[in-house]
Image 1 (cartoon, rainbow, N blue to C red):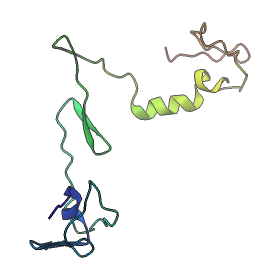
Image 2 (cartoon, helix red, strand yellow; image 1 turned 45 degrees about the vertical axis):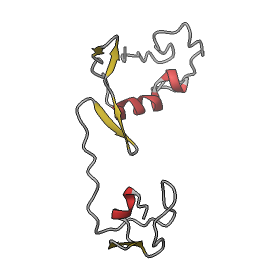
Image 3 (cartoon, rainbow, N blue to C red; image 1 turned 90 degrees about the horizontal axis):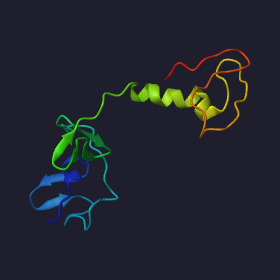
Length: 127
């Protein structure tokens, strides 16, 4: 009887050695089941992750980078993920406007390094 990993957490799982579930007594064909219903009483799946790895969706992804057999140590991030996403909402590089007065910046992204406003004097101190 083919059983997939989700079966043990399914509301329809029979916990019977002769029967997989009420809807698919012989099990499912394939990698997933369209009739899967999360059992609220089921044990939560523990997503343990070693240092240098994290989960993206249900997949464990290693974050260590190697070159020529040697690990490349990644520099510590300056901002948290939340701060990075917030930066997209207000920084002139992404909005094209001064966050203080709303003045439009000339969109010359290739040559611009500093985003200082000529209208109100706002200065970009993120660098």
